[in-house]
Amino acid sequence: MQAFPIVRAGILGLAYLFVASCDDIGVGQNNFQAKYAIARNALENGNYDVAKRYYAKLVAEAGPLSQRLQLEYAHAELRSGNYDQAAAISSTLANSQTGNARAAALAVFGTAQHEQGLELLSTGQKGAGKTHMISARKALSEVIKTNPEMDPLGSLEGRVASISARLKTL
Image 1 (cartoon, rainbow, N blue to C red):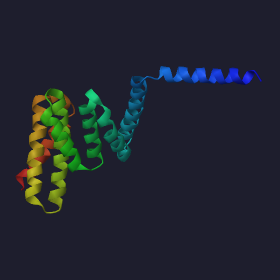
Image 2 (image 1 turned 120 degrees about the vertical axis):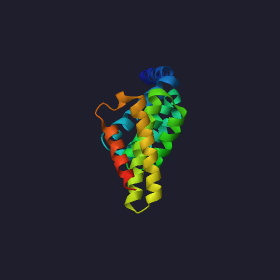
Image 3 (image 1 turned 180 degrees about the vertical axis):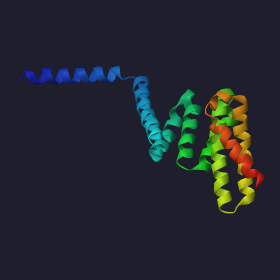
Image 4 (image 1 turned 180 degrees about the horizontal axis):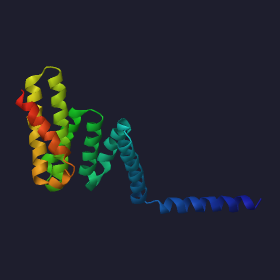
């Protein structure tokens, strides 16, 4: 019967070591990294609802990474077709950023505005569609002008050309 107290003491000792080794920073960081990996993989694999759900949770606990995660969240909204939300998030980011961070936010914002404009035009809302298209062209043109390296394949430039052509017909 002496074995039971020894086993119990051993289990308690292991539990104590486990709890003592799990400080808040380490556990929190690992949990954050795990959630980020899920969000990022979901975004890359087209599981936008999962990505948005995780990014929404992560933004609140991201600290200095908050703006980066907000941009990824906006990108998930964009890819899922929620252009209003993508534009709102990325607009706020663009207005509070400079340099590459601003350009990245403007790229998402401009794309969301373009897609919104196309949707509005397709439903006969010419005035609102035109307003979104002008906003999109302005945002994307700034990205191309200030950060041409962000458009190595010319896709933003092509989008701007498409917007300009469409605007001529309105």
